[in-house]
Length: 323
Image 1 (cartoon, helix red, strand yellow):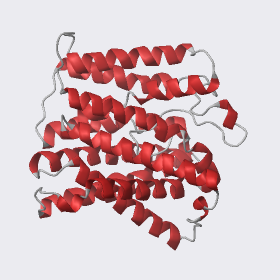
Image 2: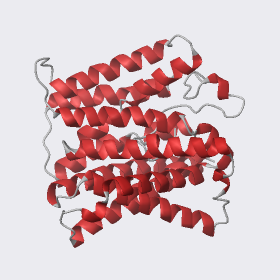
Image 3: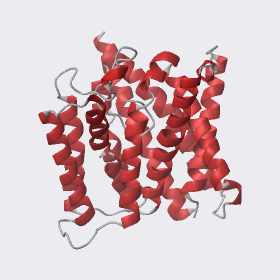
Image 4: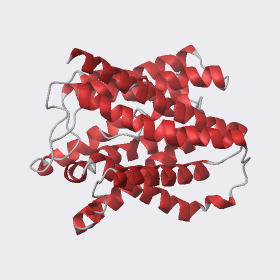
């Protein structure tokens, strides 16, 4: 049992590391290969979703069952478009206008939106730990965005807006599909979310008209994003959660923004000031606050659905895994 938990912790950490690599590879494609977030996200979601569905079919999973009921179809489309596609597109658009580390930390403000959605759905007052988490998030985003100077932004306005859109849509990604995932299975729902979301973006952005550099290095980075940053990261994280639980898993996978910062600095020569690291620390500390919350207090789904699905605890990384 103890060995299983050790392996679970390792898998959760490795899952977060794989997500970090995905973001930094995206930054590399934008900066050095002149590719766009429209191209990257369309191809990534479509490819990863198709590959995951093929793997599920080979394992004998009933992948078409999710489309048989009208309510399931509606939930699936909302999750695919407003959760998966919007979350991924806005995140990589933020990366394209700044860097992977800053964008990842901004996207970690998602608990403020999840808390907001939950308070509306449950019609209750916020708990003290939720107030603390919101204050830490607001302080962190203020420090990162302004460096303490209220008269100017230290990052681009576009990066900040896209990062916050990513955080808000991750709130939808985390809360909206819980009933469906409990009924149909996490992997099946996530695979269809990626495939449908990718197909929608593919039709909107028409990535075959991309004018970037389609070099061997670009395809290697894209392969790393699809296989390591999506399929492998997802498998490792879910296996880790199965062994140690969602709370510990989400806490350990929060190495993602830390590793993204290190990779951005070492590989892409990004520089960060001390005040950036202070802001990053404030945002990341919300994960610890939520992980230490009393059992059963962290809800990510309105109470009206509780008969059909138990609420998840904790917070996951930026949008490749469920809460």
